[in-house]
Amino acid sequence: MGDLVWDDVSRFFDPDLMGRLPDVRVPDTSAEDWQAVLDLIEARGWRSEYSEGATVLPLPAAAAVLSRPGDAECPNLRVWPSADVLAIFRFGGADEIDFDIDLWEVRGQERLDVLCGFLGAIGRRLGKPVLVEPEGCYGRPVLGFDVDAGRVVLLTDPPSRETGSR
Image 1 (cartoon, helix red, strand yellow):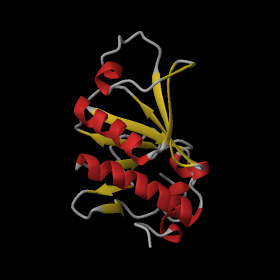
Image 2 (tube, rainbow, N blue to C red):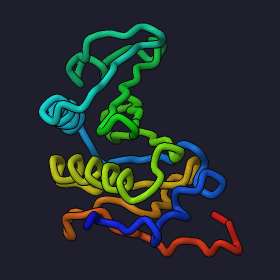
Image 3 (tube, one colour):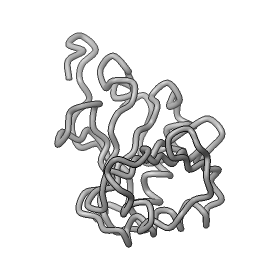
Image 4 (cartoon, rainbow, N blue to C red):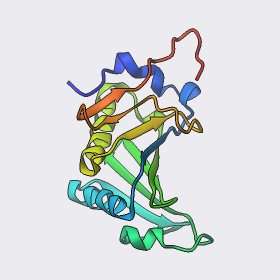
C-alpha cells in the first residue's frame, strides 16, 4: 500500500478546491540541494526536458541555471516520474525548490502512489520536507513528505464535500 489512500485524499485533488496546478515546494534549500534533485532525476531515469523560453536545451548544472540574469528567458524543467504524471520545476532561486503538478493527471490510487513516490524520493534525497499547497496559498500545506515519518502524510484534514472551501 502507498503512503496515502485515494479515497481519503481525493478532495485534495479537486481542481476546484486546489487550483489546477497546486504548488509543491521544498523550503530552505541551496544550489547544492537543487543539484541533488537534478542528479536524482538522472539517477532514476525519469524522462525530463529542460527549456529556456521555447528553446529545449541539455540540462545544465544547477549553479548555472540559478546564476542566470533576472531578465533571461524563464527556465523550466519538465519531469515525468511516470508517463502520466508531470512535474514542472521553476528555478526561482536557490533558497526554495518549487514545482507544479497537474491535478488532472493525479486520478486514482496508482497515480497517487506515483506522486507520493516522487515526493518521497525528493524528500529522502534532501532530508527535507516536500510540501503541497493549493495554488496561490503559500504557507498552507495540505500534504507532503514528512522527514521523521519517512513518507507522505496529510498535514490537514480534507475539506468536506459540502463546503468545497479552501
